[in-house]
Image (tube, rainbow, N blue to C red; front, side):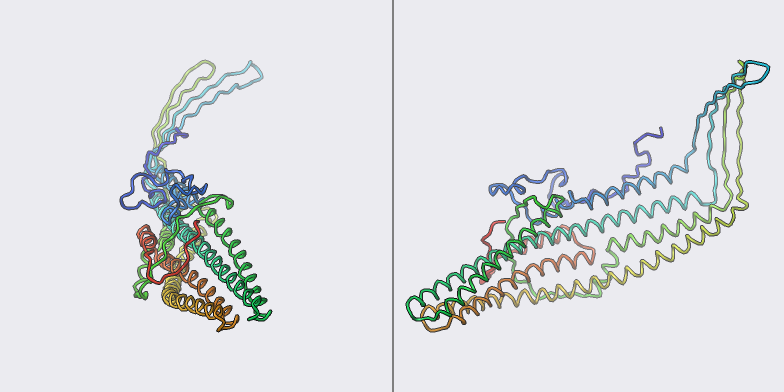
Length: 467
């Protein structure tokens, strides 16, 4: 019976579902499906991983979520341990002895007894221990939710970081192509005698610099790929193929009531809920410490069978046992003091976390506001920089401009491309970070992020490289 692995108190029914996104209209357990081989082997004819796929795979496979889930199960089992104290306990014991004496060859003695014990009343100790276990379970579940949100955000960041490096590589390739075209134009004018050697050397230097930038970005792309695989619970050297994200529409200016967001966060943040449950658990632990110094009343029933030198005898008794602690060297007093001080510690941690929640929401709100404004501005910057580069190169080929005008315009265009890519990445991550700070990072936000990519006229973020 002690090794029974069933769940008679049904404690695991208190646990939430395993961490995964159950999207509207979805059928089955998303964690039951293996990771698509196409996504690992880069088979273009098969389904590639989108944002929803990446987040679900991270929640199913990342070790952090498995640890959080197992920790919740551990605490659920502790609730069962506390509930067990409300049931009677039974024990069977058997002894066999051979008693030697100087005058005889000895006497065989055997004893078999069955004892049933049932705690009738203990002045609240069991109730306090059960409440402590329940509150610690609530804290473990809230901690699991917090871990899920952290892995959720990490997956979103890794997805968009990988997408940003692919777009940055496309932009670097385009800048390298433009620099090569400028170098060819300068070399042609030099051979024709209408340009100086300095023009050719400057164009060649710019071309080499563009090549170096492209090599650097290729390294960043590989690092982002390794980080994405790591979030998905894979080795960093595993290749993960992503579906190409659509170019994002330019959002309207972000506005919101920061005070309402802070209050919503204080209601929804799972880490704050976990801290509040820790306070209640500490209060229950203090109650249990006080009850430990009080009397307890138990019912005891025992049946015994004796065999001494071949003579059998039996006996049984029923009794009420009253246990009254008298003196324990002040141990109970100091246990109570320690438990009460722990309540103060937990209350202080809750207040500290409340302030941190407000700061998290404020910072994420300001970052999203800035990212929204930057995204709109970089769209205009990119458009004007592209036009300027085209005009400068056309004038130079016509013999009306200088190579410095071309190189400056191309450098400004390369910078504008990178700023546009970075602003797009910042906007997506800032939005997810604000949702996580408020405690509302969920599948609905993912759906809106995935649907945010509608092509806009004049949008020129390159999308040629297939991840």
